[in-house]
Amino acid sequence: MIPRNVPQIPLANPTFDKEMEKAALKALRNERFVLGEDVYKFEEEFARYCRVKYAVSTSSGTDALHLSIIALGVGEQDRVVTTSFSFVATANVILHVGATPVFADINANTYNVDPDQIRRKITKHTKAIIPVHLYGYPSDMERIMEIAEDHEVRVLEDACQAHGAEYRGSKTGAIGDVGCFSFYPSKNMTVCGDGGMVTTNNEEVAEVIGKLRDCGRKAKYVHDVVGYTTRLNTVNAAIGRIQLKKLDGWNEKRRRNAALYDELLSDLDEVVLPPAGNSYVKPVHHLYVIRVKKRDELKKWLEDNGIQCGVHYPLPIHLQPIYRQLFKFKGGEYPQSERVSNTCLSIPMYPNLTTDEIRYISEKIHEFYDKICFEE
Image (tube, rainbow, N blue to C red; front, side):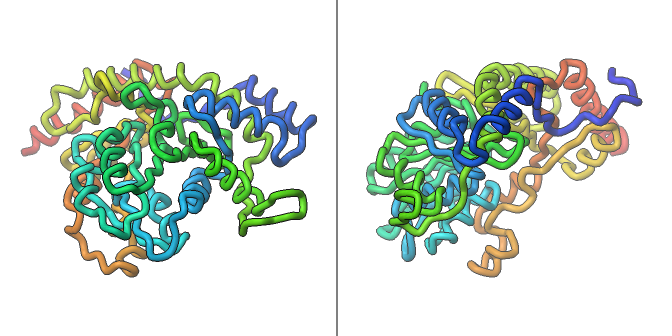
């Protein structure tokens, strides 16, 4: 039992240690602030980690998605099939290039897009598919790649929550045409600020993204594409290099934490646990998301007891006000996504979450449902 006077248990707890501080100061004192040596070393190391030929850094995960969809040739009149149950940036980048997002519903057991639903949405206008490895659990990439091959469309993996996750022995971000990662502070690894990365085995795609992120630059004052300013700062890359070295260890701790939650919460009929790994899926538990009865009441109860919670995500993308306005969604179009959005609850998950804290959180969840049963 955790004493009542301890500080609040946060939902996430990013790490910044002395080694990272030293690397950041070294970069600030010795390198160019933008596109310095650490940026290129970070890209090389991240590509090697993901077992791909190329990695190109950007200033955010959203920028990684945006530049990737441009590099894959998606534009006006094209359609891109993706999930509605994700952060809004997944769909926004499709609109940014003038294409139309076409949503497919999820599999409620994995929270990821359902390949059967993807297949039903493919038309002659479909140019790409964007599966999201939500909460760090890989999508069913074997079936998605089969669909893409059958219809000759490109695949952009949104791996912004899945650093280090594996599917049938391959790292996420190394299976489709491109993979995109975010280094936002709450992710499994961060650069202590915004940052992103694109991974690919396609040299031409890597070259195009490298230009797009740097003002469309071919040479210092020669620009042969209309580009953007979405470069990663050198100090952020220096921190990212240290975090990358620690990522596998952190992910293993997340798996152990998830296994303990699974053990302690498995006896509650009111709680649906997140999907566990198996022989071909190795998740990294960016978030530990349960589906529960009386979600909002449980959230308040836990927060009143010093346990920070989150809801990822309370509104599927198709029900966001701007998407209702643009596409006239009314609700009910994607029932699985809507059902999960009304019942999902993220509870604390990070590498240095202690066994005592997990037991305390689990005890409080039990107390809540014991209280509800007693009142009923």
